[in-house]
Length: 149
Image (tube, rainbow, N blue to C red; front, top):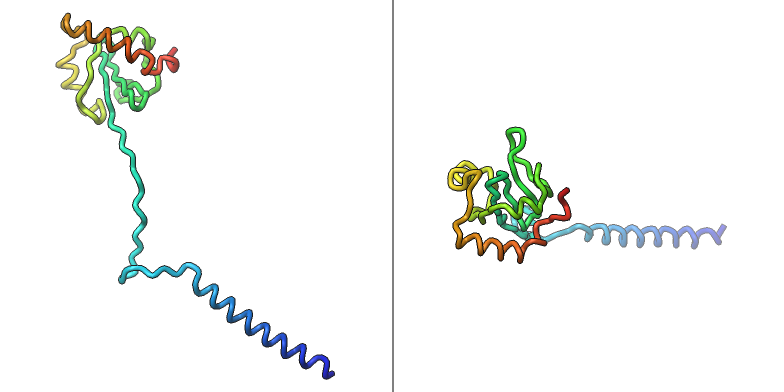
């Protein structure tokens, strides 16, 4: 039975070494030395803010945001935002008179004032009409006409 005694002692020593090693490794996992009070502060997250850039089409009561590629308009008493306008083709909409808006939030916040300033049959002055035609030529492909139909 002497051959079992050294084996038994080695197992105790091995078990003790493994226990100490496991305790040491486990004690280090997840330990963070932070400010007193125990508060955790998350690292800063980069945020990208895209401002809306609306163009209003008075004949149709439709706004278009190029930065979002969406048309906003009233439907059934509420505001909707969709990739295509309602009831009109994109080509026809873009050929109609339009005016660039100076607000950068929801059209719903400004629509009452916009409608008063630009009623349904509003047309730009003759000098502005030439500018609009040049603008339409330059931006015609940027309003998502492939999305409408």
